[in-house]
Image (cartoon, rainbow, N blue to C red; front, side):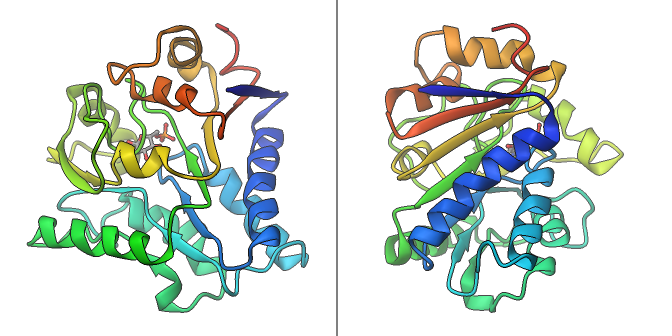
Length: 240
Ligand code: GLP
């Protein structure tokens, strides 16, 4: 796995965005997946700007969501849906059929998993996936110990993830489960971009690079493929 270190967060986001732009320019109807969470927010801004400047055109691109908190929807500040729409989809002119995103409010999570798996089956494999890294090394909501052979599924959230979630919601929410693309689907992507920013991620970034590839730290699993790259800023690289 190649590692790219940027000076700061804006440069990191430009570098990550370039992966998506190159992918879409090579294949306008590419299937793209970009994580929710805080880390990719600058990537969304860079991609919106690129479209406005005519450096990329998402008119035919397909987007699939990575994960969602079960029980939360668009009206819930900090849900993946709320964040990705606010910072990205709402700023592009996309048709509904270009987006497949988990409905965290579903009363039938299994059917929801099948729906998203079906969409990926139709449009996939994912051409480019941009992943954040959880404080415990999760990717999507694939928590430590997640099975390698899973497609979309429902996950019991790790206590670390539940604690960290307060930063999105501004308050403690009763989030116990997530719904996520599984490791099998993620690792089958043609281009995998793992990104991290800030000193708080330095330790898990170092573990990702130096610990053996195993589902004990899911972010290490991207090392098992040549199709993956790690993008970090100086602060996140400080323990490497
Ligand atoms: C969150 C999300 C992931 C995200 C990761 C890192 O809980 N489920 O999709 O990539 O954890 O989040 P952040 O970028 O906010 O640090």
